[in-house]
Length: 116
Length: 113
Image (cartoon, rainbow over all chains, first blue to last red):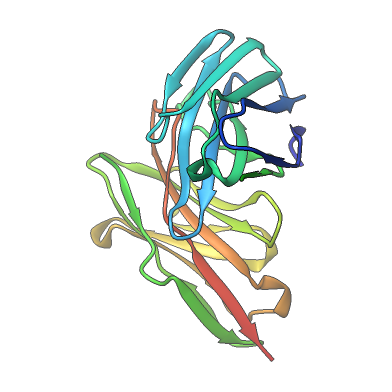
């Protein structure tokens, strides 16, 4: 299994509070991603990073920010959590094959976040 | 823009029967394709992938998938399903040079005794 950990694994928080989720990898992969998973929606990309301090938005980025100060860590922050952000959050990592530029993603175990 | 359609939200198969999960994609260039499996409470595990070459690809746990360009499909198959295959399955599509993937909404596989 790819060395990806997420913390915390479960969190309950109140509406309006800030929340930070952490993704840590030991694979030295350049690319890291944050997804949310909701019933009926599959996985939707929130933000991704293509290097230290290099990030870009995904399809559902509103209300979320990210930071990557080291190769191994990618943080997802909900500045002011809302009930609509109750979800399961997955981190993924990838690296291209350098020849065909294909990106194979490997996933962490997920964080279940409940906003009350 | 890329898109992935998994037409079946739920499928129930008897243990020992064959399985086919459907995946259709929309993309102008040659895609690369994945199937992932997710057991309850777990992350996604890569089952198999297609980048180029032989259109029939083999994966882990006895699964295979066939890329059919003419039908824009990448269906997942298994000749004999085991109870432990009960899980949710996701198809994903990417493009060469792009680091993001687009996922389908998933198909939940139920295995009956």
